[in-house]
Every structure is written in C-alpha cells, then in structure tokens.
Length: 433
Image (tube, rainbow, N blue to C red):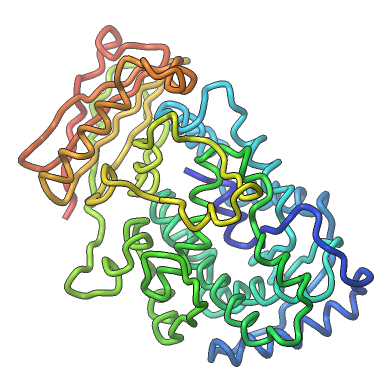
C-alpha cells in the first residue's frame, strides 16, 4: 500500500530538516575516505564482506527527487500507484480529497539525509550533512549496501509479488538491519563522536511526523523501530542497542519474513513451535458482470488492518517536539488486528465506479469476533464528526461472517451500489494450500 515510501524507506536515512553543521561541507575526496573507513568497520561488525566497492556521491534535494521519481517509474506502474491510493481512500485510511503522493513526496523530501541506490550500488549524501552526523548516516546506508550485495534487496522486494504486507515485512527487515548496525556502530564509537551529532541522531526521522497522515508515518516508523526489534527478537524497541546475531541475520535475509504479523510478533517467525505463516486467499473474479474489470489485488496484513480499525478520532500526526518520548508509546497494532491469519482484497472498476471486496481470515473465533466488532464500529452511522471527514465519499458494509472458516468479508463502494450494476453480493473465495 505504501508504494513510494516503501521504496524510499528501504534506502533513505530520514533525518532532521535542519541538521547542525559541525564543520564545512565534505569534499568528494573526504566522503570517499570516510566511506572506505566505515565500510571496513561494518564488515567487521557484520562478519560479512562487500563483494564490490560502494560508490559515494554528494547530492541535493533536487537530485534526490529526480532519483526518487526515476526509481519509482522503473519499479512500479502508474496502475499500482492508482490502486494503492484508491484502496487507501475506500478503506478510510486517508481522506478522499488528499493528494496522497504529493503529501508523501513532500514528507520524504523534508526528511532525507542520505540514500542508497541498489541499481547503481551508490550511496548519496545530502550536501547539507558532514562530520559525525554524516558518519552515523553512512553506518546505516553502508549496511544497506552490504545487505544488497549479499542478498539482493531488489530481488527480495520483487519476490513479494506486489503484496503490500509481504513488501512491508522485507522493508522492515532491511530497515531494521540498517538501524541496528547504525546503533551498534554508534555505541561502539560513542567516545569519539561529537555530542551535537549524537543529539541530532536521536531525532532521526521525526521531521514532519506531526502533520503527516497516520498511513504515512506509522508504517514508516514501524519499519525502522519494529524492524530492528524483529531482528533482536523483541516486540518492543531495542532500547539497549542489542546487536542482532549475524547468523540469524543471514537466515532471515535468505528466508525473509512473510508478513507484518511476523515483524510485530517476532516469535511467529523465529520460534519453530509458534511459526505462523499467512493463510493464502484466492478471490474468484472469473465471472464478473459485463463492463466490470479487476483493477488490482493486494494483501493488507496486520499493520494495515490495525490502521483500518483505529478509531477516526485517534488518527493524526505524532508530535515529538512536545513529547520526545511519544515514539516509545506508539502502538502499531491493536486487539482487532491481532490474531490475523490472512487477507485478500480485490478492487473492481466500471467507469468511475469502484467496488472493493476484502476477505479476512482469523486464527481463532475470538480474533474473528474482535475484528468483526471493530469493523462494525468503523462502518457505523458516522456519528463521530471525525469519521465523516474520512468516509463521506464511500459506503462500507460487512457482507458476510463465515464462522466455519473464521472469516469476515467486507465491501466498500464508491459512486455505485453493487446490486443495480449486477455484481454478486459476495465473490467466491477459497484458501489456497
């Protein structure tokens, strides 16, 4: 669902908009020297070797935006971007009048301090950064380069098959890897680092969180913080900067997590007895009425269903300026989304009309009950003024509750009612073996 942010969060180190300048801007020669130095330190930290040199260059915001747009055009289709924005609006995750990708691009433009491009094996440092803060950025991004050379980040993302939940899991694994190496590297070199740079690094990624839609900032933050927690097998933040086990790192990059559920609840990946891979659901769209066509399919997973079931009045930005500890109290899931077994959605179109079917399957009857109750509340009469802002343009309803398969099926419609156009009440679906 987070197409551009999924892409950029994988390779970008998010930083304060106005970093402290501890010394003059680095020259290209200085950047290359420090890159080589930290690259050797990351090799020692991770117990792995780079297979080829990593190029390093200095760029500016214009260069970043040009790269981001070219990268997006090369890796995802306009149809995918349109699908994701439409799905987000029909689920009530963002208002219908929001230009999602414009807001997202502005948010990321104001944050990026450096980024790694796997296509060219090049690290780019934003021109406004130098000194020890730039070294901290390098520790993060050079870890991405090492992971990319050893395991192929693009290949892993491509293997997710356009499944937003699986893509998030890989994103979180990669960002968690970069964050963990950066934190461990920083602690190891604490005595020699400038205190101003250390204070600035504590604010990484906080610029713009107070005004960004929850759909943008929460999964992005989860990728960094809960991704690191996943790697050290903790369901919370890695406050003590515990180093990930290198053998376990190689294991999860070789056999990646398959869902946000496994990121948020690491035991469901690491513990053989509790391993919980997603249920694969197939929705039959072979007999659609005339003029209706499939515009896309996707899987949301626990993290996005938690956003869907979050009360409208609780949505909004995260103001860490007023409360620096707010990040520590962020909840990335809830009772309604926990116990997720699998889901699948299909987006249908007929002219301007859109219909979205969403099938969810749950681990236990209790999990099914909790999601059913939360979905019923979300699709209520809109008495909450905050809800009206988000849902005025679309209708939603629970189509069916399948107690035998512990499933709940929902439908959302925009500019149409399913009946008159001949769509079936419920599309047939099955669990794939």
